[in-house]
Length: 319
Image (cartoon, rainbow, N blue to C red; front, side):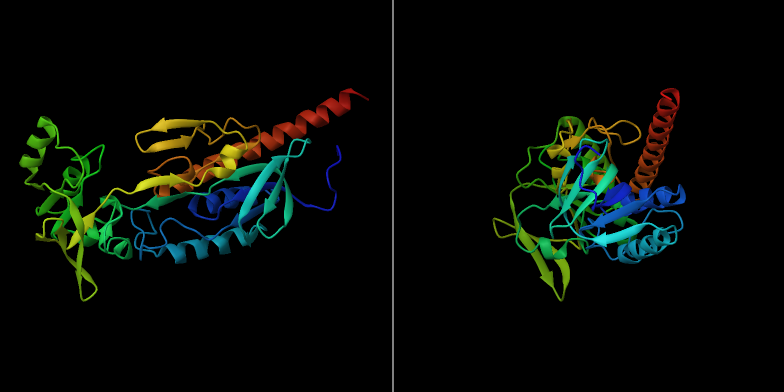
């Protein structure tokens, strides 16, 4: 096999990342009778959240319980699962890849599905990071119902200062937008904010006020404190796409930064490599990520099937 090491464990597909997208892909591949390995670094984006919402039949389930259930399901179809960090993947010269883990293990995969997610880079404000996923939130669709009708604060996004404040006004009539370092909203957005009843506070934010383990206010740099119970922020999404870009995957510009470009099935520009979930987009909620993993898995199975049938046909005609 073109000098490929014969003692490597070999799988039809290695799924890199064991979140919703990766486990969904693995479930489909296991049911398709594909030899599949999931390698999970154990860094789910939604780990700080106590519950996940908006996923039909799983609304309110904890992220940890969701992942545990997914691992049980894929095991029932013979899918292998291991904890570990994939540090490299390289084409092996025989229509596949050699995958290297941080602990030195090496594995052969005919195809790769990368579902490594992203990291949220939070604004550097005193007291903010420890409240993340509790009363410092980013997504009203994920958390708005649970904090409805409380006193909301919104830290303005530098590029879209009014957008999030307008959106969260669906869940509370008491919304204050902190411009912080963002520019003033456009005339149109200012009119919308006024129509929504959003109060706009100028000046930089210095940090949060926390009393008895709950957010009670936003502290301004000039010494003022604005009483708030919840603060929405827009973190900078940083995709964990180093494996994909090292393989040569192209990226595309989005309003939230560069993300790996894929087609409708998750296929990247690198032959044999698919990607799904937050590794390819900032707004892939759990249900979207699971759907993306499903699509990628069906495309990979079809690709392997047709590749093998073409080889058999070619071998038969050569006799």
